[in-house]
Image 1 (tube, rainbow, N blue to C red):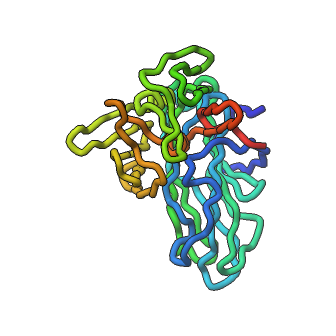
Image 2 (image 1 turned 120 degrees about the horizontal axis):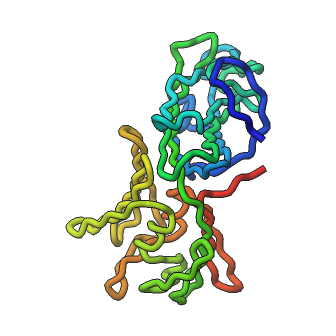
Length: 290
């Protein structure tokens, strides 16, 4: 069990569960040599009482072997409830509360696995948001410093079950009747736009002029357009990314349907499929992995 700790520069070694992360941030492969970390902004929904870990790799872009140094420069916790939050960063299995140097030397162009832990204790409230800023650099070359920002929001966990062509859905153990059933179109499962957004704690916006659907969850906004195989994700004030889709939202029988896997995973859920019963299962937030 975790114990509340004073946030100091003490070194701690903790064994944590790997928890849910925003889908574009889990185990990113290292991209071009110009970036030490492929993504510099991360988002994850959080469940009170459970630790979430966001994994990434840092690439040593210095010309020589070096240890890595890192420091948490911002801990933006909910005012008045800071005592119910814990965070740290880790190199492999050694963790630091504020700042510290990796025990390993990383060769030029080699990578070191790292992760940041976001842990809302049971006293954290649904809707509370946090922002953590981490700086990482090769110890021998501080000018190669990379700044990473991690956003999180406490959500109400949900277990959702849908059956293709049936209007009956189960959300958190409660039966719900849908206006239109989920259906398979061109090999992709489509669900009512408002139902899936509300089931995943998101605010839903509709722009009739541009036929755009917007889902807002904490510091993340996801944009989908009718008949357009492209979505856009924004996190915080700076990060923006366009995502190709293989199934576009559509309007059928005056109802708007969206691809459940894309919407679910972008918002931080795990979407499953059972072919024998044609059942879609959605776990939110995405469950931990040991």
